[in-house]
Amino acid sequence: MNDDYEIVIGLEVHVELKTETKIFCGCRTSFGAKPNTQCCPVCLGLPGSLPVLNEQVVEYAVLSGLATKCEITRIGKQDRKNYFYPDSPKAYQISQYDLPLCHSGHVDIEVKGKSKRIGITRIHIEEDAGKLVHDSEGGSLVDYNRCGVPLIEIVSEPDIRSAEEAKAYVQKLRAILLYIGVSDCRMNEGSLRCDVNLSVRKKGEHKLGTRTEMKNLNSFVSISKAIENETLRQIKLIESGGTVVQETRRWEQSAGKSVSMRTKEDAHDYRYFPDPDLMPIIIRDSYVEELRQSLPELPDERKAKYIKDYQLTVYDAEQLVSSKYLSDYFDMTAKKVKSPKTAANIMMTDITRLLSKEGEDARIPFISDDFARLADLVFLGTINNTLAKKVIEKMWKENLSPDFIIERDDLRLIKDEAYLSSLAIETVGQMPKVVEDYLSGKEKALQSLMGQIMRKTSGKADPGIAKAVLLKTIDDLNSKQV
Image (tube, rainbow, N blue to C red; front, side, top):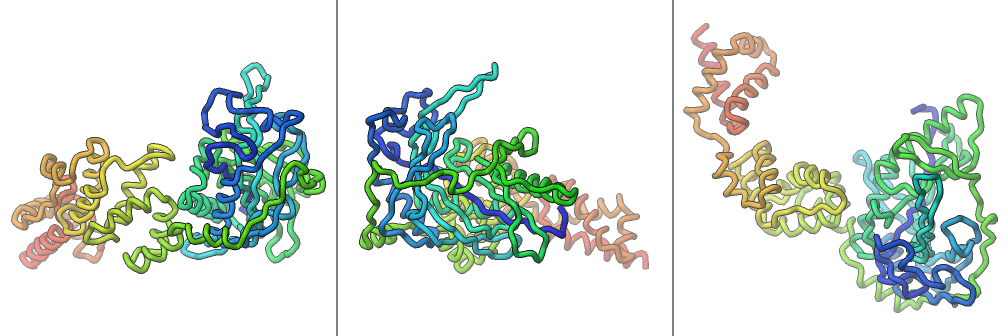
């Protein structure tokens, strides 16, 4: 990356709402149904059909706005956004233009130990388009099941300056939406996807560069890789004397690059106008206040509690609350353990590692009581972190209690001083050169000796006792030689 340039990023996050029926008709929204079995004249935009707004869509959008500190528009409307795509049967999309339901909000993120506030320009409601399915012979089929599935589009200010910040922002948004229950946010199913608007400029400049938009990124890896790749592409283009063109691009994950799709449209190209078939959206103050009171504890509130009550680091607290499932599981565990901080440390290492291997909807296979007991065994020194890793992996596969596994597989820490002393004497005798290095002031030599003792005990030696007997053995040997 060229350090002379600054990246300017704004994100448009599209979120499918968790309603049972579509935004303007009674068709179901179930994912994975047979193609074209969940559509009707309304979502296909056939002549004579009339849309009727699903009230729960408004409720979920307002909840999302309140959870992201937005102001709520009291008198709004819906607009027709005119464009022709093969998967949009009406040749227009019902969306919102100048009066979005929510506006002027923000979310706070943590990146590299620093907090940053990312502004939210607007949150508006709209209908989703269909889905093109490309066959092996070069043709394309259209599945209209997704037409009319309710969306909110969350548009950020151009406040993001790196791929890390973009990822942290989307993770925080996803966590908030899961906490308030308006979407399942399954990125692998397209329930949450992201468009990246990106430009570069020389550091110190105030004028924005020409931006490109990369569409429909549906994983954190894709978001990060696409931003890094597009940034390099634009910088190389500028440095070689070329000009960045305002365009829409598609990220191809398998190829690791983006490709041009079409020239980017501006708002006036869509010829927005109020939808004549839909009434204005009137939102009462009492309605907003009722929804505000219904909000659950949000990620930032839990984060503050974890830092204050459990002495977690800012980073650990942020990582825990980024997953509602993990945070809920930790809350259940924290009520039962002697040291919530110990439990959090294990969750952030071993638990997250095992969950990440099993996909987006993976769940911990053992109850929080068993996990609390494991954390207590670590805190009390019965086992160390190395042994805890082995125990957790066995719990994961066998769903047995930690005490049973420790007894069955002999995984307790060895605290017998006489036994460890005999190992220390043996190790010192086998590694005289390393002992000599330690006595000459090379502290790393002691680590090598300790590593040998740990290997002899399969990692079960109590580190504190083993180190003490090892140092005594070396001192005794040195005294005799002197």
